[in-house]
Length: 85
Image 1 (tube, rainbow, N blue to C red):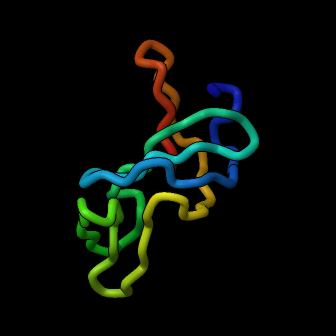
Image 2: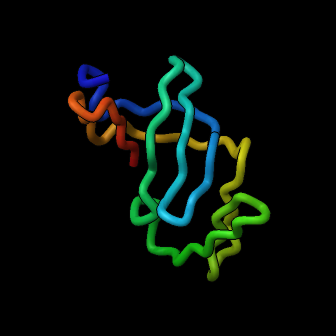
């Protein structure tokens, strides 16, 4: 993934947590994290029952199966992690 830094991809939310979203990219079977601070100026609340993050001001909702567009912002080869923005 290191060679894909800065590139944008379409993906699907595979998990929602209190600290962000895990997204699986469509173009390749790679999962990465979008930290909650990368979701914009909105304050998001995590609903564990619904497995979703919902914006307080706008009501924007990210849940399992939501389609998103992400940018590869960091790759940790040692920890085998991809971080998206």
